Amino acid sequence: MTDTLAVRLRTAPARPLWQTYQWELEKVSAQVRTRAAAAVCVFGPFIFALGLKASSTVPADTLFGRWVDDSGYAVPLVVLGFAGSWGFPLLTALVAGDIFSAEDHYGTWTAILPRSVGRRSVFVGKVLAALTYAVAVVVLLAVSSLAAGLLLVGPQSLVGLSGNVVTSGQATVLVLASWAAALPAVLVSGSFAVLVSVATRNSLAGIVLPTVAGLALQLLLLVGGLGPLQSWLPNAGFVAWHGLWADPAFLRPLALATASAVGYAAGCLLLAWSLFHRRDFATA
Amino acid sequence: MTARSRGSAWLATGVLLLVATSGCSSGTVTHQALNRAFGQTFARMYALQQQELGHVLGRPADSAATCSRSGSAATSGSGAWLCTVHFPAPDGHLDPVSFDVDVAPIGCYTATGPPAVVGPLQLRTPSGGTVTNPLFAFDGCFDPT
Image 1 (spheres, one colour):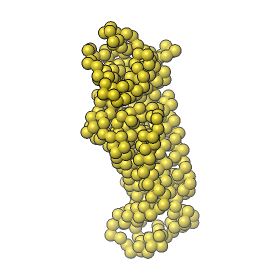
Image 2: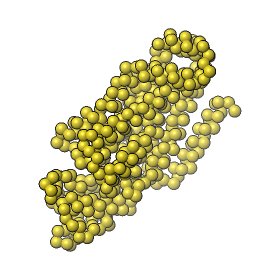
Image 3: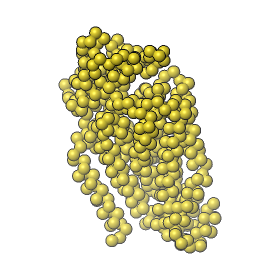
Image 4: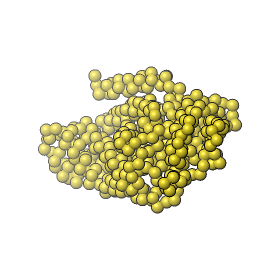
């Protein structure tokens, strides 16, 4: 794979960024772990919903868990609750935590970097490919869990988070909006994993560190005691969608979480770039 | 401007924005916010329960609630709370009933009512089906910022 990449890199591409992005996407989608993650995202929610149907109890300790037998719209929200607490950091780090360090592992930087595309294009192409994968994970899980809920439970109206009854049509829109609301926090997870991958040059660290950090942040979010800083945690976006399900809806936590997520992601990527563009790969 | 100084400028702008906007959020669970959120949610859940039981709703439940910390004099913070509402008894008069309310720092709570008053976990509908009793235990969220 890297041989063909090196050969193709010798012919100077007209749009180097687009080219590196496409090559990186090809590399990511050829990996077994990417396909395994995609399979989990597509089939996981169906297995989960079947398990709920077979079980006599409901996951009442998760928001909307009480309603999984009464409305199919509760299923994607319970899945979103679980994914936000530990699934997203692991799923995004699987690719983002490996995308730079894999080249260290295989010793392929010297084949890629001296070519005509330039270091900036390589960096941006890799980051974009990792984040594209992260977005794809969210989209797959959202669509699959909504489909699982609707097919296995049904499109009944759902009780929201202030006793409000949300009708079927509104609920579809709100479910998709809730998943979209988690996207900025997912991109923070991905950017942090990229930073760890660049900094440690080790894929195991790139996958394990962001996952552990995600779990630690989740504990911080749930235990509290941070006062106003609570809504500025990098993972606040994983719970900020709650406001969409109240009547009247409250969107302030969502706005704060999204604004801070942009800052965290930009900070991680800038730091990663400053490490990457000054690194001496020839002697490494 | 070099790439590095441009990066620093972006970072500085981000930090400034963060500081400027964080000043206006209080970030605590207060009894006012919980009274309002819990009272409203309870009244709606009560109406839902009556509708599922096939009862004609005589008078809507009062949405006023009084919440206090369990075993503490504090008037704010996450943890165990007790919220008292006026529960419409079958004979028409209002009974004060207390719910145990566990509030998380993110502004979501789980309320559990006394089963003798709110009924069992599963309700029988007039048509013979079973539904989840909305008042047995319910979740709600309010804005903690």
